[in-house]
Structure formats: structure tokens, C-alpha cells
Image (tube, rainbow, N blue to C red; front, side, top):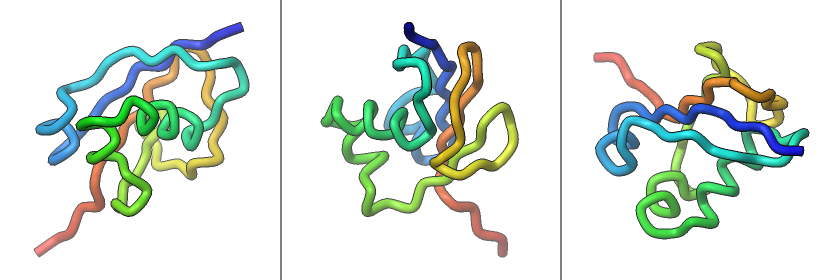
Amino acid sequence: MTITVKLRFFASLREKLGEGEPLALPDGSTVASAREALLARGGSHGEALARSRAVRAALNQKMCAESALLADGDELAFFPPVTGG
């Protein structure tokens, strides 16, 4: 069984990857497995979401850990850390 989540990208990630896209994943996937699926695409996804880069995630508009479980229809957002000034 598969689930589909709506990906959204913000700030510099949006500049590289666009606003967002749907992503089909196996049932039982986590935020980490979604990121790995995107990394496996290589190219701009591999660069923007590389493990060496600090990237935050929000699940349904709430900050979350990469261990968070995804469900069909969830919104998963990735964005760089934000600093104030």
C-alpha cells in the first residue's frame, strides 16, 4: 500500500526545487524516508536536501522530528533554519 504526501519547500529550498509536489511513499514511511527518497533522485534534490545541510521539517504545519510517521494526505514541508537579526 502507498500513501501520497504533499511536499512544500520554503526559502532557498523553494528557489532550487520549486514550490512543492506530491510524493508517493510506502505506507509506514517517516519524514526521514521521504527525505531519503528525494535524495535518491540526485541532481538539485540531492544538493538541496543533502545530509550535510541543515534542513528542518514540518508535518501539517508543526515542526517535527525525522522519525515522525507520515499518513496519506499529510503536508510535509522542508526549509532551512531561520535566523533572526
